[in-house]
Image (cartoon, rainbow, N blue to C red; front, side, top):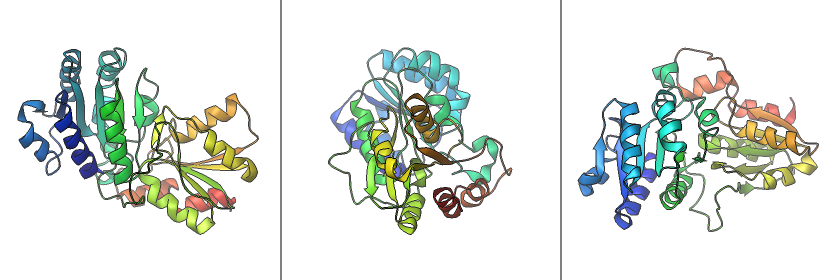
Length: 298
């Protein structure tokens, strides 16, 4: 995902001289092409993320379109006041690029786990939230954010996520789920780096699968329509409450559809201090077995 973001942003910056890239002393081996090609539009702010958000806001007020790149927990939790007051409230052209969503940095411990970020960021005003699932969704989301005005949040995995799509779909639209497969079984809806895992589960279950790379704004109508006959939606995400499952639940609460929601997501309490992403996700039940159990009730 990181490479797809970097190459897509590079191409956008060649076309749009307003685009700047700021980093919080991360992104080595990924961001160098941008730095070498556009040295006057690249800033390494160091391990000073709150200051970096302030600089980004100032650049945006001066007419720049700024992308801020850091590990997912730092530009959200550490910089929440700056993101809320300086960027979101003023509708500034600043996009947070959050690397390592979910438990991607599982071995670094809870300080580096990004499991609340979507729930927090999507509550802020005026902000678009994207959580792509593979390199093609990442390239599409980056290009869309480069074209859109206002604040944005782009949540990426760590970089080793397998490609699921064969390319960027010609009919992909912001706010619309992407139908990957149809089947007579349950209806699955996934977001972010759970895409490949969810596809494996959908194939095993012969289920319908939607990928949801846009969380704000999101029109879940296609998911709800598909779930009417099955009577059940399984939401899958590498996140705790406040993400995709919560968005679907809010819709079902406001306009009841007689559909049961079974979320597959992280619990609110950390289950271990540190461990591999697969190990920690499994402890939360965000794995193949957990999805199948939610879909079948067994």
